[in-house]
Amino acid sequence: MFDTHDTLHQALTRSGIWNGLYTALMASTPQLAVRSNCDDAEHCGLEFFEQRARVGNAPISGSITINLTSGALIVRADGYAGPRWHAALDRLASAAATGWTWQPDADHKPGQLDGVLHPSPSVTAETTIGRSGRHEDNAQAGLALIPAAPEAYETAWTLAVTALGVLVTNEPTYRSTVLAEPDDPTTDYSAAVSTVAAALELLDDNDDFGAARDEDPRWPDEAEGTAVRALRDFRDALIDVKDTLQPSPGTQNVDRGGCCDYPHEMEV
Image (tube, rainbow, N blue to C red; front, side, top):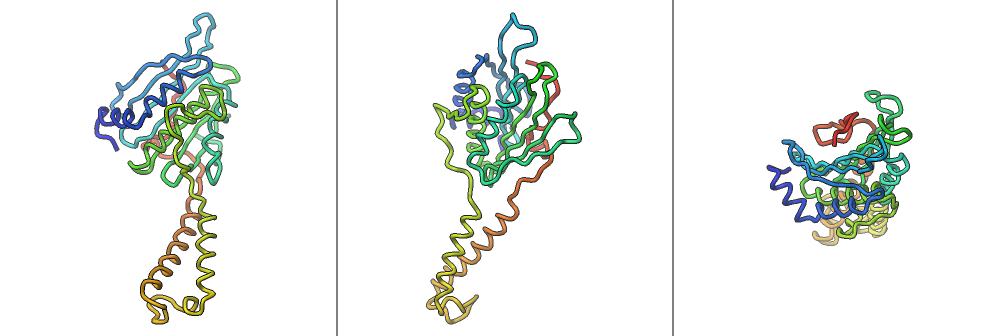
């Protein structure tokens, strides 16, 4: 998706995502320090951490990485309470036609869950939540927003900024102060099918349209016949998408930048 770190950085800057990420982290509670990390050949991003020198084993730590190849934006953190993660995930699901699909992952230690959400046809969200190895009663977790095509990366990144903001500020309705909310990325396929079907039903009540199919000469004229056939094809396509665009449980291919390769220990 991106050839070099420079092209990725330019896209993050031009879209305002860098500004959105920094703004969310600067509003964090507790306050976090941030530093850049673009040393990896495949990833570029940020590291964040809480500085509380007098409290042993207390600081929160995490990272934000953007995969050069897939464009996936991945947030990982250790030390936040489970409800804060769930609030961030709920913020993503609030506009989605379907909710998160959860399942235990046999490849992970007991107590970990994998989740998959499709907030839009062109964006997939994946998460892994488990117990922190360093912080009692808190979580070690990761969230990836993965665009299916280059034109979807800004939507995926903006959704990631929103979820990050909820996580680090503990504000369930967090909205970025520097990024516009993405257009509702969710297509309500059931409603779309109903709308198109209702239009076709009205047409089919007309004797001229109702009996005519394909290249039948009874179409009132060629243009109207083409339009009705297109509506029928559109209805069938919507039904196919509605039936197939369902969240499937399980760990996704990490080569796409999935979150489920989350390390058990995080160095910051």
